[in-house]
Length: 212
View: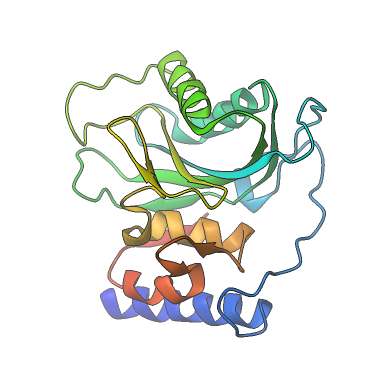
C-alpha cells in the first residue's frame, strides 16, 4: 500500500511539475475560476464579493472534518468564508480523503481554499475560529476529532511565530492532505522558508490519501 501511495504521489508530482514547466518556483498561469461552484468533486468556487481592496493579500486556508457529515461541513465552511468582510474566495481544491495523523476518529475529508483578503493575519484567524465555533468545533484536547478545522496555512510571504499564530503553518510541509490540494490549485507555489510545493510532495509517499 505504501508503494502504491508513493507511486501515486510521484505521478501527481510529475504532472504538477510539467504544468509549471519543470522549474520549482516558476509562477504557473492560473485559469479563470468558474462562478457559483463549491469544492465537492474537484470543482472550483469563487465569491462574488467586491469589498476587497487593491493590494489585498493572498492567503491559503486548509479545511478538514471527520465528524458528522464532513462533505457538508466543508461546503458550508466555503459559504461561510465567502461571508468574511473584505475577503473573497478565489478558488478551492477538490476533496481529499486522508487517514488521521496523530489524531483520533475516522478518516478526514480535506480541501484547501485560496483567499484574497484585506484583513490582517490575526483578524483573518479570528474569523476562521468564529466559523469553526459556529460549526460545533470543540477544542477538548489536542488532536480531538473535529466537526470542522480551518487552518491559516499561508498569508502572502509572511513568516512569523507567536503564541497566537505561526506562518507558514508549522506542519504544512509534513501533510499530504495539505500539499496535494495546494499543488492542485497553485502548482507554482513556493512556501516561504520551505521551498516549492512540488518539491515537498515526494516526502509524503507513505501517507494514505485519495482524491474524491
